[in-house]
Length: 295
Image (cartoon, rainbow, N blue to C red; front, side):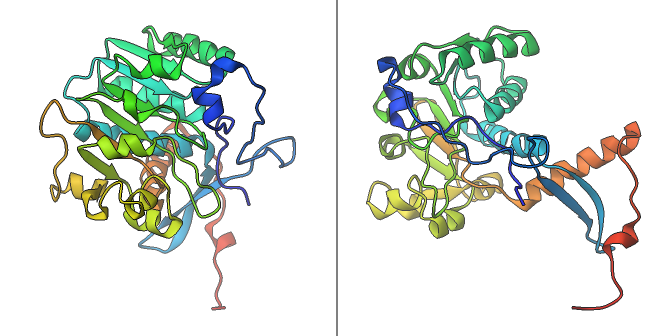
C-alpha cells in the first residue's frame, strides 16, 4: 500500500546548480498515482491507546506535509535568529507551500524569496502563495540569489542532491532541510560544506540516520567532516540537554531527517476532533476491526 504523498520532481545537482544551462533532465517521482482513477492510496489509522481499538481512518496526504512543516517550525523557533529578516525558500511544491505558510506565521519576514529549477512552477508558486499569505513572495532567478542576502534558508524539496553551495552560507544564517534518505535513496538537500561550517547541527534522529547511513548525517561523521558526538537531536534541544543558537554570528542547521508516528498521532487527533466538531466523516462500526480470537 502506498502511504506517502508525492513531492516535486526529483532533480540532481544539475537541476539546481546548473539550471541556467537549460539542459533537459529526467524527472522522477517517489510515488505514482497508480490507484483507481489515477489517484493515490494512503491512510493514517488512529488508535485509542486505552481501549486498544481503531477510532479513525483518514487520508495521509495533507497530514504528511503538515507534520513535516510543523517540526521544521519547531526547529526554527529554537535555532533561527530571533527576528529573521529574509527567508530564502528552496522548493515550489507540496512541502514548500506548507513550510512557507507555517514559517510566515511564526516570523514576520521583511522579504521572502523562492527558487526551484522550473521557472514556471516557481513563478506560479510565488504568485499563489502571495495571494494566500497576503504578502509578496518573490521568485528568485538562481540558487545563489536565493541564498545571498538571506538569514533564513529553508529547503523543502524532493531533490536528490544539495540544492545550494555551502560556500555561500554566511555567519548568522539558519539553514534547514527535510532531505531524509534511506538505504536505497541517498538523497540530501544540504552539502558537506554547509555541515562543516555549522556551529550547531541538530537533526531529528541520529539512530535512523545511522541505520539508513544518511549521507548528510552518518556519512559526514564517517568521513571526518563532523564528529558524531557534535551532532545532536531535536528532542535534546527542546529538553535543554544541548544548546541551540547562543549568539548572532553562529551558523545553525536543522536537518529534519525523518518522520515519526507520534507526529501523525498528534496531528491526527486534532483533525479527528475538528472533524467531529464540524460533523464531517462517516461512522463505521468499531467491531468491524476487532476479533475474539488471538492469531
